[in-house]
Image (cartoon, rainbow, N blue to C red; front, side, top):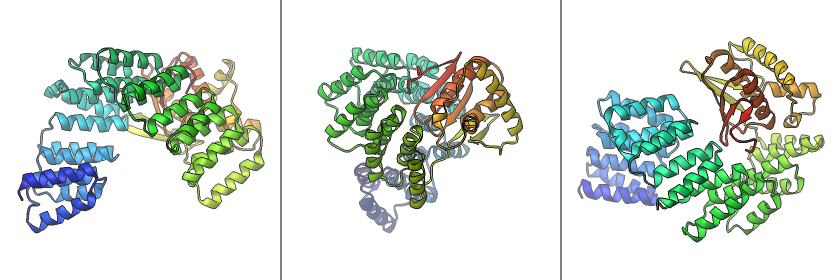
Length: 476
């Protein structure tokens, strides 16, 4: 067997996710002294990465006596595909220090990792690298840049780059469609999708996820139904869980909870945890106890340790003032060892990430932050702000609930931004959970009284607050 035979069979193992067979070939390569061959070892890194065995991929990569661009790219792509985006960026920088110049595929891959991290600063540096090297002329790099700016909330820059692509392919269109969808611009998403069809391009399952998400976030129920049927009937795309979850979200957000339930009962498969949590979240917002309990029980049946099932059901009981049930659920969480994921928000300033949790006083700037929040609170009340205390899941006095709301993690991060981010620049905050109703309303008012643009990326989407309004149109 030569290097070409090994490369071909390892590629097949990776495509089939046949890790056990791949390990046998790896052992044979060691016995026959082929591990020093850079092409064979690179194929081995790629095989392990595709089989989601990143530890063995790293081991093979680190033991390679000589690495070429294929080797570095295989490791970089492996990290990216397995969710280790920071490591992908680190490997790229290490590759450069070793004097290896990236090709278009390597550069496109590291830009994609920056997109997954929503790291605009690093991504912008790679954008410059693409311009200087001329690699931006390759559609793989251009598409990655469109995705980067879309995921980082700079949809205007994404559209400019999209327009500069001379020969757009399906990936180009899907990248921009998804960017507009995540930003909540439903009409723009749909118009772009229709334009794509007019150009004769074939949408895939990812494109339809973007379109269906846009419909759900804007309340376009009929359009969502139309595009789901179009996907199945015309384009013969078999729906996967992502598509079904979008449809559950479509009905749920619009308050059509019975329709959402009927849709679930007609599905050929059961929803995953995201699907059930989506329905449960809407039941909480609508106060529907019956369907909410059904969704919570179904969610906890497939994932007993799922925090969302307990917390969202507790929210429904708390909104109705049934504190005994809230206490029972909390006891159940303690007995099962289930811990609620703490909400945290972060903001970047001078190349340093500042992280905040609710009621956090660990920052060296805490005194300034809390003073800023106190001043804002007075001005917000003058503007008509009324705290939405139903967001608080504690049986405490109303004044204490208002205090808890005012110290949510995103408020602390926004106050930090108002103090330190220069006027004229947007304040960019990232949150690991969905923004609560009260903080959403409060941030709208803060943007009005301070005349600042505030961009918040929560677990679901981007929110651009400006002049007292949000880009989501209060539908998220």
